[in-house]
Image (cartoon, rainbow over all chains, first blue to last red; front, top):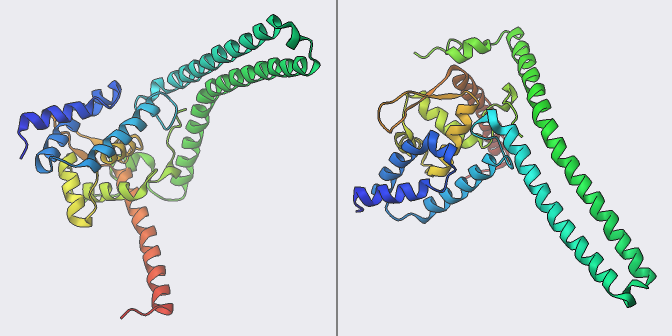
Length: 184
Length: 112
């Protein structure tokens, strides 16, 4: 049987796998849960693997890469920031390889005279520019979509609520207050 | 990119886990560990912590459950009216599947 102190330390170590916003919201109850879980079953590899996998997913969603973020008010900003960051990394690497190729091409007179090499370098230059513009357009699309999708979703939400209420089912207000289905 | 959940989302992703949690909370408010124990008792499914908190966050976001204020670390969760409606619809679908499955099995299969 593991001591309470040991279980608490392990629970807090596992909590650190999650991002700060998640820890702020679920941290205390997660530690409490884990302390009880570890006390009853100290060594459970399946449990640890599950936490590693799910915390990784939460971290990716907090970066705006997969799924919704915990704090939806900053989701658009995060998604746009991540897309811009990835686009910047690509631009830096693309520019590095392109400039290296150009320098080696220009500094070697024997290679520079080949027509095939000139065509190939031209193709590299054009494709690098095209890829950079594509990525820039992708980042912009994410930015625009993050706002327009919110607008579309809120419109759909209003329309679906109206449709449901005219069908004779419980209204959203009634559902959320629990009046639609009364507990006995 | 965050999409505001719509009514058509139902129980969201992984409806099996969501249905287990909602069924447990239909019996009364519970905190995380009590919820896992209850689910294990009535379904023999052992919910892992990462899966549980992922599902709780999703269900809370969809408005199907709500976290209640608590003075200590254990925060209880409660089923909302929308959650009860969603669970009821999900169970009705499951009942139809069970009925069709049993009917087809009884017609074409025999078990000794």
